[in-house]
Length: 328
Image (cartoon, rainbow, N blue to C red):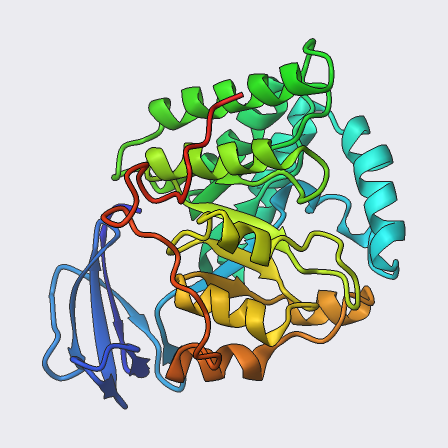
């Protein structure tokens, strides 16, 4: 957004220990870049448009680490459904019937809704796209909104455009995400192409391993829906991933409502992150979010002293992985 703006008079909470907070503060923004933060009496610019924030609170934009903008136009349909009822409708009925233009509109609306709520950065965990056109439409919708986002391309082996299901469709998706990553890899772009792993258990595990390696080699942000069904082994692969040296620093594990203490220790020890969807997890019967358990590990590290360390790049001749993984 071009122009110069001075937000002044409100309580400025910087969330930056080096700056502190300002009960009567001001923020000067020029062409979308913050130029100055401080006391209202100290931050002035006669050329800026003044926006009076008295009696308000000025904070950095919020970050949503788990958002499905492709569902923005249909969210009301499944609002009262349990998880498996919702998934069967979503992946077998709604999304296959969604056109390319609808996907782009849904992404745009979903991103603008986030901005309107004060969320300026999102992790868009994309569905299993049915064609390259659908994938590019959702990416374009995010870009059109002006939001900062990770476009987490959802991997799968379902039919992809004219490519039949199975390994050919999986390879077609991987080839397409590489093309998108190369086209949109500038660090200055607000929307960055990332990768969402195939739903654990829906593809052979060597393909899951190859997806993780693919993202790691290209420095791509990577996420997965993990441990999201209470008292179930569904979408659980934390210990297997650890045994294979596939738990990478910065990987985002979404839900984790059925995660064990040991699995949380593995995530913490390997520098992983957990995204919790509190209302959805409980409303859909997925379980209780492990908020306290995550906070404890963030403050003190793993609770299990026996957690093995995953091999690092310097410890393994095959890179970050404990064994060589061949691309299918």
